Length: 173
Image (cartoon, rainbow, N blue to C red; front, side):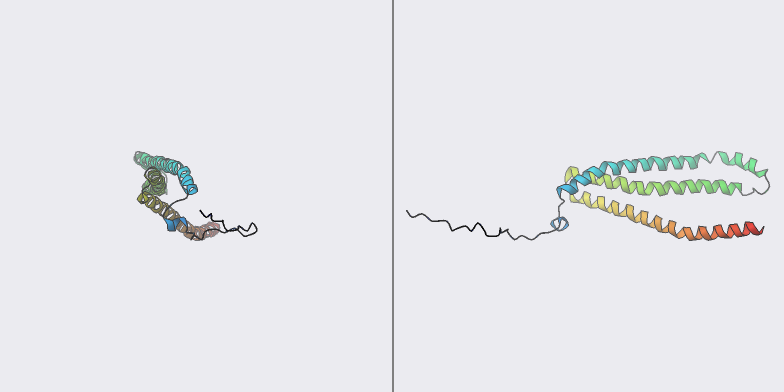
């Protein structure tokens, strides 16, 4: 029998690695272990903040409802004060304001809670549809936050102008 002699190995040769295309996790369709750990850590906090937001929105709505029995009493008391004929409008405005504020708190809380819940569902089952729904809720939360930010920034010049007008008018009177 003839033995084959292995080829000489050059100890000074550069190491060679197999050439394999490197794809991002998004292209591969999977998540890295670190991504899963971060999602797992964020999920309970997202659900917690969502639940706290629900409770806060409920308390705000109850505050608005609590104004209703005081309308008649406030109407009688304030009607005696000259210049306060618009007290009923003020009370209705307070109810609308608290209801609107409750909705503004409830909507992002719902997106955050759903985001956390869908992450939890994905981690339990591995179904990609849950992850897609989670990120859809994340996008909706940030879109809502962006719209509120734009509206808030748009009101700053209006409030500033009205404040200047109020100061000038009060100085002239």
